[in-house]
Image 1 (cartoon, rainbow, N blue to C red):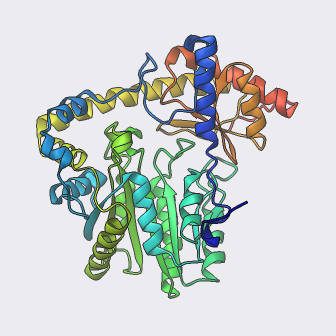
Image 2: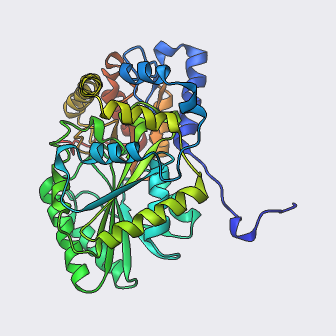
Length: 422
């Protein structure tokens, strides 16, 4: 076998089980008919017709942009108007006092990438929850970091502050700085969210270690925030980041993929907030460098679209109404599933909003395989099975919980009456 790649790249492979399950679902639909298949693998919003949906105001405005917006280079940091608009959208009415800047990124993934690259040391641990988007692991491995996890929930279904505190203490015993990634609200893959009180506990833990001379960076992944609930209510926790010590730095990974239904346009941003102007100036310089050396610059047309919508009161009102319609659809679908899950005794992670619901199991691959016997295709994860309520119409959501429960019983050989969703 001839090997040409660098030795450091040996063993670098990507096996995306969710995309593989999606491919199997499409094959089944072609063979048995789409009406007989439930494809719960998709992470994009689809209407009741199961077709990928775009917010009408986004489609209308995007089609009206001049060709120059599609073909002209943008600055590595992003258009100035876009960066300001992204900051406004990140915080809405809950902007904390402090110095703020933003750098345009290639989607939310790009934002996470440059946060890891610039705010963790090579060889260091990065900390996140056990229920997580599995690409976090790859993003860390790609640049020589080690992703560590802690149990996201306690036995009562609340954020596990004790496990978080223990994990932070353990890591900072061995290193001087730490990057923490928290995907909330509308966590992927569960729909879970931290409460304001739980955020206060998180920040108290961080303050304790900062007083002991440690540096802590917190990356809040808000990719799904547009469909997590009323925009200021779900952002109320952000006001707690005002006045933090300068060695506690907060970032937000923003994505246009979900909130603007522009998944393929790869537009996002990393927003930084600090009580120190010097920290934000450093953040901007590092962000510009990272952007220029990774993707050079991002989609100018997408940036123009967001900027125009955010600067026009009527367009913003239209966007809010259309997002609300999508959000209500998601909630109706989730309500059907959780109601039926409670009725049949199916355990699920407490759902508070967003695109996904997850079913805890240590045998996720086997459960997903069993589900395929009923032409249901879902994403097997380390902690359980992910269901994309974002793409399943209400008619197919009916009865799905019972199908999942039966598949789990076949695999696990028992009936579990514990309902974690209550």
